[in-house]
Image (cartoon, rainbow, N blue to C red; front, side):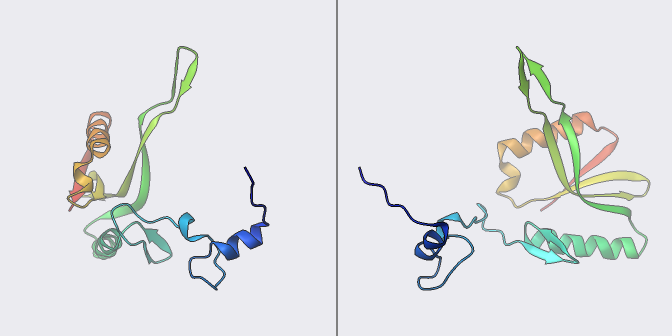
Length: 143
């Protein structure tokens, strides 16, 4: 079996996305969102979808109007701490809320989801674990 040897520069040129043009990454290395959502940037923050970015803009308006306070993006919640099982370290499970804020004295964690992602088993499990571990928080889904 014969192997082709080439430099990194030759590799980039050969596998460039647009033939004849250099690319930072080969076409096969570019990552597409599995749900075809487009990353969107607002106020130097990058969101996973246009829908999430629009919700951020709406929440910023509500915060400016005094309806909500303490708006945070991408807040991490530990659902299951790391542990040792028969001598093997098992990673913990975290949930990353799209937005967290306070409204009428209540702490709210909000997730922006499409109808498809809302039905995914891992999302459903994490949502239930969040509700069990953080009963003082209100969980909202923006669909």
